[in-house]
Image 1 (cartoon, helix red, strand yellow):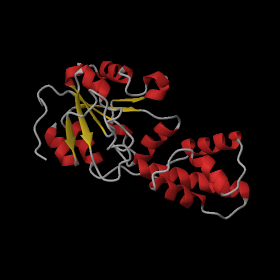
Image 2 (tube, helix red, strand yellow):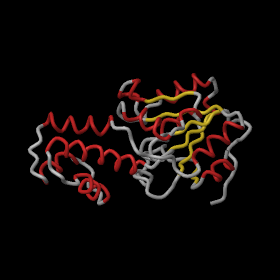
Image 3 (cartoon, one colour):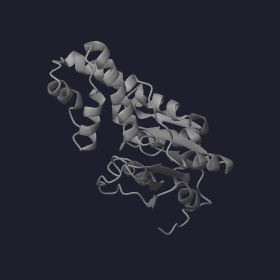
Image 4 (cartoon, one colour):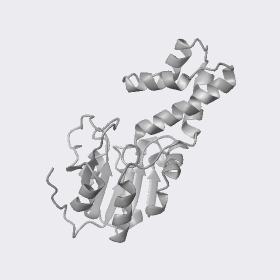
Length: 232
């Protein structure tokens, strides 16, 4: 893909998504299944690799109702309260995840250029802060917004977090770039606010092929860290 510069003299801040942009979401899912599997073995005394069954179901594309289906398949008889506890185990576990290749080099390179860096991420708490802590990249960001802390109505495609982080970084909307993965929700709000939007594509992303709503397509697509740095 030919890389064209995106108004470099005007860019003052680069804001990133978290899941499937800075690390692979599927690796977090696998880590969460491992935590749930260990919890169930401790609770039931059954030496069953529950996580392998969940993972096979996930990679086959059957991702809804995972824990209910798990209970039915293994005849666990889990109640709604038990299912809620599994969700809590999943969201509160300390994930075994790493940054995608090239991500830290991009963040370090942008900091050397004296760019202001931000992060906007949807998702439930405490999972999102635990993810950022696990990949060890929080030190690069001047401002981090987990939209759940603002309320569910602030989740993307709401513009609220984008407006908030722009104010916190003290830059105009026209000087901002958003780098993310999911066309179905990530780019609509920043496009509408006059940001530059960039989809960072890599293999094995979960949502990168989702259809975009009207006005929600990314303005640029990159496939590597060096390509993103050249673009900016």
